[in-house]
Length: 223
Image 1 (cartoon, rainbow, N blue to C red):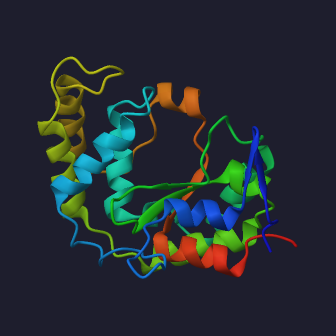
Image 2: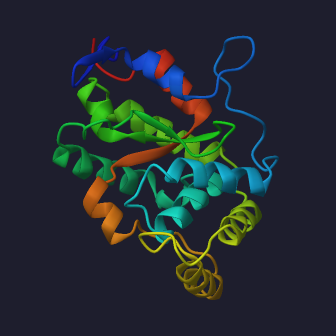
């Protein structure tokens, strides 16, 4: 089981409590993965990403693209095979340092909570088990139905709200350039921007909200 408490600065909270606080909560009190993928309006997804990324000054237009790509298409693009996914996690796990200041355990990528990023540093610090996480990651990639059309529609809805004055390349000019090159290439997966990678050193796995809930209920680490 995941150890009962996570240390972060001066506060201590349970891992389960942190996940349940971040994931969408149904009216009856249970965690909900939200409506079926594909039913989310593109404008709502774009507005959610805009609001969440407003608190990430280092995020550039590539990071917006990646956020919306994962929100609409899940993590299937990152799983060429189970063996490759395992080796990737083992290598990354061994390099992990302590959580960054204020780094959350889970970041929801959609307003309905159907897709999340689970950050590896706080998960490891909580005693999380990488094998359990790998199973949740693989299950998420297999079960989530990607919606490429939602991604493109949300991406372009985000672009319509941009002007020329946003910082860190999150502006209309940078959007148009990336939009053209991405459409020409068939809307590929992309890396984080260099600025964001340097500032945040992102280390996470994309899970469905349902798998994240099961990961907590089952326990992700040693007792």
